[in-house]
Length: 225
Ligand SMILES: C[S@@+](CC[C@H](N)C(=O)[O-])C[C@H]1O[C@@H](n2cnc3c(N)ncnc32)[C@H](O)[C@@H]1O
Image (cartoon, rainbow, N blue to C red; front, side):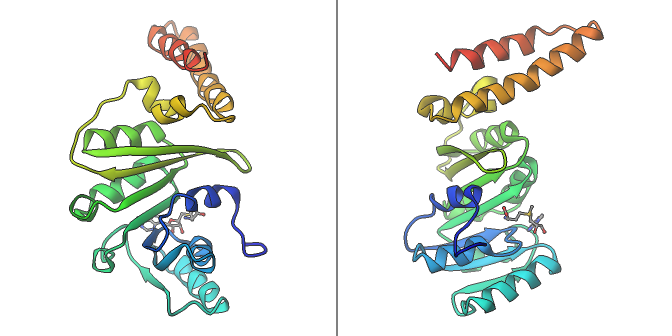
């Protein structure tokens, strides 16, 4: 963390944290995000959790350096186990695969019982995470794209028990991203269509039908109109 600020990816995620919220940062690693949230008077307190002792140790050292041991509690745990008792208003999970993020969320009843705001930044399998959230009664209330060393996606969700369905193209790019069409949306669509073009090339060489991939590319390009 340089000059008390975060990288653009974590800054973007932190912009969704509600003012005065008690926050859980799952997979906190260095604890830069919790430190930022407290030093900028965004969160009232943070439980910073990580499954590995190394990151927990790093987090404790950084928190101590910033004299924030009274407001940021570090715990070594898997996902949301043991976090329920802190009753977080917001849960941040950044820098993990979309499937792991879903595994963590679905292993605990807390996000269903207390409906905290979920601020998620999946590195991969964003479409899988969106599908699981929507099918399991979580509403995707906002989405954002940001660039740092590459393009990142933020998904903000909250449980309301209503199951929803998005088509495959919306699951891939994020329906709210398609509605918002921020300046990074064009680059976002290009990145996904490039991946699908590569799949088409491979399948064509093997003589496999590519009509699904072609339809996805068309639908994604139509969002740019
Ligand atoms: C790539 S780092 C991301 C750190 C930070 N959240 C960020 O976005 O910069 C992933 C962190 O998640 C932790 N982690 C992985 N699986 C976890 C789990 N099931 N529960 C808690 N932490 C986990 C790892 O130990 C690691 O510190």
